Image (cartoon, rainbow, N blue to C red; front, top):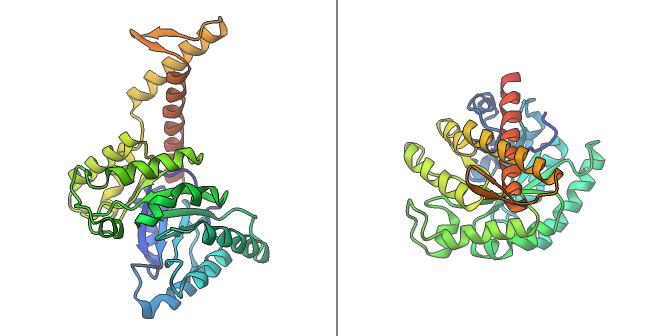
Length: 301
């Protein structure tokens, strides 16, 4: 089983009781798979799906478990089962409380030690899907070093839309403040890989692409899919193009050469390049490198 949650461009949900769908999810090109114990599993089947985590197959990409919400009777049993299985990550729905996350951090540490897993190996992903969660994003990220990403709950009929009372529209106007607030909090807390959550209409590739592009412009670094057909579009949008890579590599080569010669502000293709521009260029190349690693893992599988 993949030991760590890399910086994914894409993750895809599968029902928690359908492990047979994991190979299909891997073939979709997703960078990680979310085994969903919450919305995809009926209450009567949750104990069985939870017990099934002990039999998760090996996979060439990280397996992340979405637990049931912290305020449900199922949450801590889900945490124990995920900790025993040694999954790459735990997705926390309706994340709102830094206190719960600190308790969760300690519980996972005890589980890792008890079951012989590397301490700190189980990452946390926080699904922000309430007004309280939006407000507490910064404090939640700072509450635990395990937090690898936050997922902005942008779904058309999702909990966040209902909680805020906004109108969902394709251009994202109603959610713009909340989406920007979560991004700002993530960056301020030192998190470099926030992600957008699901686009519900999987038969609407143009709508998906538009929402991916909106999220990318705001600073998000990936998106979650609910259907294999969504993954190629998500990966394409969140992967720098060859032209972007070549341009930014040239910027860095010329800037680094100038700095070595005692200059910190130069012109490349008629545009000023300084330390800030160079920092952006390094970010683009880092994203391209992560995408290349993800593609290599897919080829190896």
